[in-house]
Image (tube, rainbow over all chains, first blue to last red; front, top):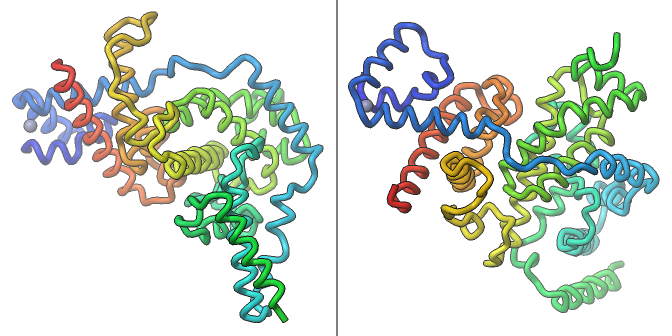
Length: 183
Length: 194
Ligand SMILES: [Zn+2]
């Protein structure tokens, strides 16, 4: 057992997941190697620190605020978000090319304006729950409207996200023109 | 059987059947854990609290997309982890060099100073602060496994499900992440002349 053998598996030792024989080899090395035993002590200390509660805790009105938000959420009905993301985007295929371009541009504009809005997220934009991970691997998730905003968001080029309001207005005007020219 | 004797999964089933008390009990069980989890990502208590609320609201509104094939904790950590990561990405996009106190990026994690948290034992507070700093310096894929393993103390199997990566990958990633953290802490000691 040398230093790099030990370091590549030092987590096992920390998690007490090594076999008895391996663990003896590890400890023998630790007893004779200052660097590794210092490293091990550091790892243990860090783990204890991480496992201890943070000094901050939830505010006293957490539950009340949560219930209030749920109540408001229920009272709201379908959000603008849901209205925007349900039927139309999915039905792009039969459109003419210019229609496709216009729809894509509209999606970009919608994406830009929604994602730039800082005031909105009383309830965070629903794309948040998707990302790389799908809760519970549930079959319902990929088909849920929640997965769509990600597609819209990623369709927004980075250069566009940074555009000023006036640039966006110019852009909207161009879209109106495109729409007007559509057959 | 009283509600509080149910497992998380059983409570979720009651909640799916319309029992709101079951939901409140789930919230009670998870709110602090989720706060601790998210706080370690975003390093800002107010922001973390909002994200805990967002998570729990999603549990409420998406209760029917939960299937009992997964542990409830896996599901809820997945939601919370995604919200935290989305928040970090938003900040990264927003961080046009602002010195906002919120971020996790290079600019936002100041090298911890020696004189904060006067109420805590000095050395303990310093260690806590350094560890938080080192955690914030880790790349997100390393930070995530450390938070799940060492903060939340979840099993490797559960982390593998939450992150959707093979068990062996989780183990080697945790190992590398822990070693990287020690390097960061060591460099910090050198900077402080400790
Ligand atoms: Zn060694």
